[in-house]
Length: 281
Image (tube, rainbow, N blue to C red; front, side):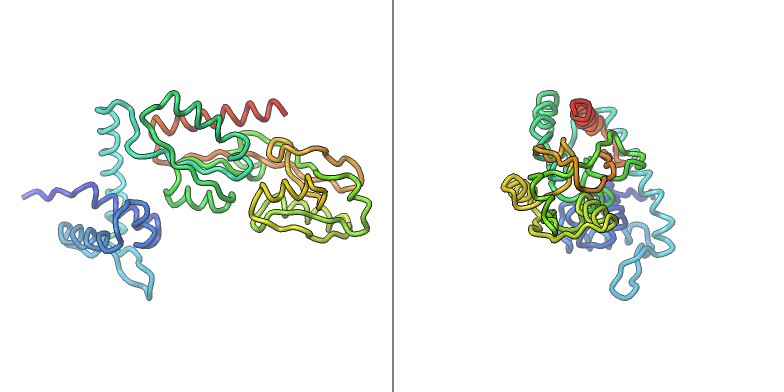
């Protein structure tokens, strides 16, 4: 008698492998950790093999699990292609997108408006966080599309821009430059500190915050100097003299390997917004 493998259980198995733990996988497939454990027990009984083994507190694939994994991915791919071919092109569940704070303040409203008008039945799940966190969420299939900051050599870079010193120019005459920065990890923070230290320019951090709004308030209030791009910070004036040169930065747009026509359309909307913003600068 043929054994039929339920795709929901297979999807949970792949989620555990990709997420690296039952706890993180439970968030991705929207079931409790105990329900996930029962699903794996059911799958192992159907296949009559042990798919996982314990290494201390870690759950790792057994030899049989390693053999089954590529077939599991193939099963899910066929399942999803069949549904897409027979369906109306709509997305089952939300499109999950992540922005760094800067883009959330300057581009998000326009992106949401354009996407909603052309995809009225789709929903959006938006996460605003730092670049490192967003890329981790994308890698573990908890986001579908990420717009973040990276190196201009990144293959996913869609535009580049110059970093600028921003703030009250009179602050540059201080013996010790007052610096306002976002908390680690932050590419702009690292660039500012590296440039000042390479130039031998004394500085002190007068404000450190996780909030871009708080950073903007500190700069406009004359508390400290910061570095950003024109598009991201939207602050005047730029400081052209008295401070060391800064590197360029890239706007990086990545999409999950699990492609869907709706996600491709959302990717295109974000891409157009970024290109238009960069052209305007």
